[in-house]
Image (tube, rainbow, N blue to C red; front, side, top):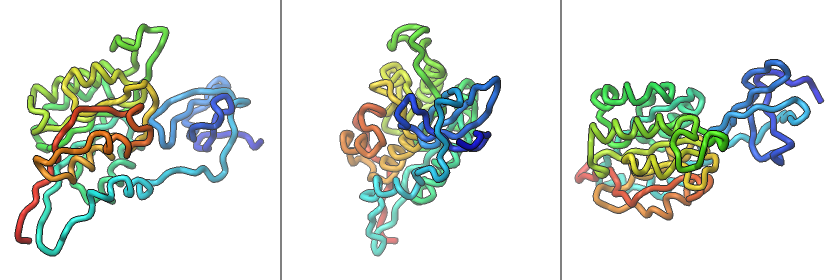
Amino acid sequence: MDELKKGDFVTRKSHNHDTVFKIMNIKDDIYYLKGVDVRLYADAFEDDLDKLDEPLIEVEEDFIDKVRDNLIMDRSEFFYLPGRILHIDGDSDYLDRCLNFYKEAKVMAVGKMLKEEEISMNLKRLLDDIKPDIVIITGHDAYYKNKGTQTAAGSYKNSENFIKSVREARKYEKSHEKLVVIAGACQSNYEEIIKAGANFASSPKRVNIHCLDPAIIAVTVSLTERNKQVDLISLLEKTKYGSDGMGGIISNGLMYVGYPR
C-alpha cells in the first residue's frame, strides 16, 4: 500500500469499510480521521486503514431527489416564499456542503460556523439579525460509555452544548410553529434535546448521521406550505438512516404561497 498522508481518503478494516474518511492529521503513528459524508471523528493505526483512490463520495445533487416532491411548484400562477433557514455548524466542511444543498433546493439560508460550545452564547444575536423560520444547531457529537448512561447529557461530547443552545432558541421564540429548531449530530442525546424544545433532533438509536440529514429536514419544512402538516414518518425516511438517526414532533410547513405572481 502507498504511504498514507494527510488528505487521503480511507476506510477502516475493523469496521468493514462502512465509512469513508479523510485523514486530517497524523501524530505518533495515530491517524486522525473525519467522515466525508457522516458527521464523525475517529482515529486508527495505519494497518487498520485502506486507501481509496476514487472514493464514492455522495454529492449534494444526489440528495435533491429526497426533497424533489417539495420542489414541484406551479410557477405559472402562484408565487412562493419558502421558510428562511439559519444553519449553525461546528464544522466548516459540513456547513459548506449544506449551503450547497440549500442553493440546489433554491431555499434562502444563512450559514455560520461556530464551535459547539460557542453557539448558545451567540444564538440570540444571530436570531435577532437573521430572523429565521428554521434554525439548525449541529456539528459533532459522540456518546462515551465510560462517562455514563445514554440518558445522561454529560455522557456525550457535545449534547449538553446542543441542549443549552436549544433552550436559548426557545427563550427567543417559545412557539414550535413559529421557529422550527433542528439540533444534534452523531449519537446525540435525542430525548434531552427534544425535551429542551427542539422540533427535530438526533439520534434516537445513538447512531451516526449523514452531514446533510438536518438540511434535508429543514428544506422539506421550508418548502411545505404553512399550516400544512409535514408527514413526519415520510420526512424521516428521507434522511440517511431514517428514524434511527433523526426523530421529532409533528410540525407544520413554513412556506407562504401567494397569488398572482
